[in-house]
Structures are given as C-alpha cells and as structure tokens.
Length: 166
Image 1 (cartoon, rainbow, N blue to C red):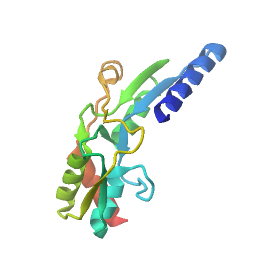
Image 2: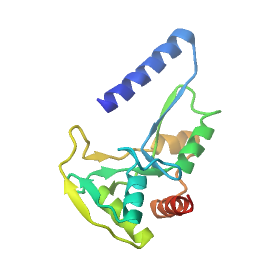
Image 3: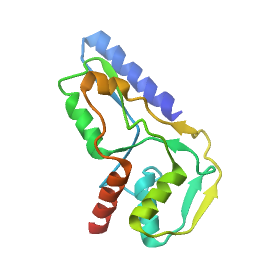
Image 4: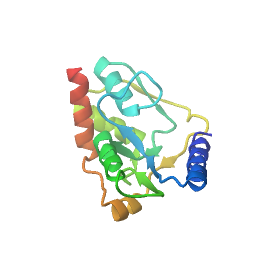
C-alpha cells in the first residue's frame, strides 16, 4: 500500500502537469538517513539502532536480517534536490546508492562504528515488507551528473557523532 500511494501521487503530479502545463521533477528516495533523524518512530532504522546500541537497549531485526535496503546519506539527497532546481524537467529520478545492505549488515556496521554491541533478536518479517529495495540510479547519474558522495561507513559515523553531541 505504501508504494501504491506514492505511485498514485506521481500520477496526480503528471495529471496536473498535463492539465496546467506545469513542470515537475520527481525524486524517488531510497532509505535516507543522517543527523536529525528521529529515533523514536518506526522508520529510520539507522537512528533507531544508534540510540538502542548507545543506551544498551535490545535491537530487533525483522525477518532473518537479510532484508536488503539502499541507504543514502541526507547530504547526498540534498545535493540531488539542488541539481533538480534547474535540471530534470518532467523527469523521474531514483536517489540512492544502488548498493544493497542487509539489515543485519547495517546493524554490524553501526555497532562497529560505535564500538559497542547490545542484545539483538529477530522478529517476524512485517506484513507487506519487501525483501529487497535497492534503486537503480543510472538515470540520475546520466542526466543530472549526480552520484552519492558519502559512503555508508562515513555517513554512519557522521550520524553517530551528531547523536553524541546532541
């Protein structure tokens, strides 16, 4: 349902564009993470894991831990948005890294960055959750000259350091 709702929104944008002759650029984001992400919701697994590990709380990994996601740092997403101010009229771009990372792998990179471990447990995969969501960013690279600049380890370190200071 989540993906269908997003696609419906894109349909409305295209409809209004045709009707009112409006320009648009649609950016489809991967899993965006970075400083200022709220760890108290159900989204934002990076900030959730960081908070849980720092506080010695248990971390829950859904499914077998092998669900794959594409994690893109917020500064890279901001850069893509800025490029689209003058480019990409009536286009759709995927904004991610194109690199799959399992939830278990993400947890390990975060705990290695923090140099601390906590208890983990696996829970049933949530209903409707995709096994894999990794974006093809070729069009954004080609048309916008955009590509992510911050790799996962650096982005996680930046996010952790911001959290510590906060």
